[in-house]
Image (cartoon, rainbow, N blue to C red; front, side):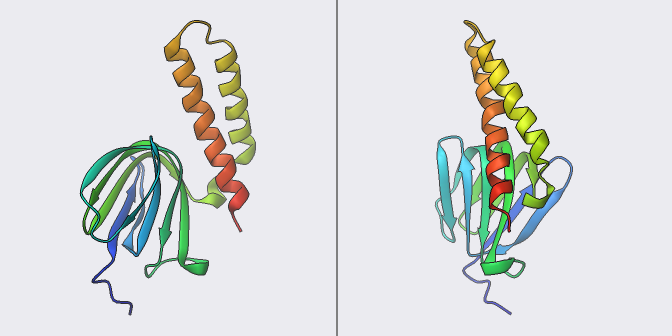
Length: 144
């Protein structure tokens, strides 16, 4: 069994289910300000989660090449030196992504953008929908 002394305990949770709760060597995740990588001993922080991939490296339940990937949309992440808790509004394994539905969501987001007029709030909501759809499509395209 692998030495878990210098591994993070990573937990990925949505309101509906826990997708992952295992040790990992590193985790990459999308914050609102860009991707970040967390290793054991990282300084504590809280960040707002964006839309994109959570990638887990190493650990006992990792897939091919020691990597597991999940598409997440919005929420929060808490980083402590020995654990990472990701609270996502939505999270999917790559094979769970409905690509035609994501493309419809992308089209809806572009339509919202075109109809936003002078409303900054409407533009922000359109960008939110577009970012989520693009992240799902990208994740599905990378699955093996």
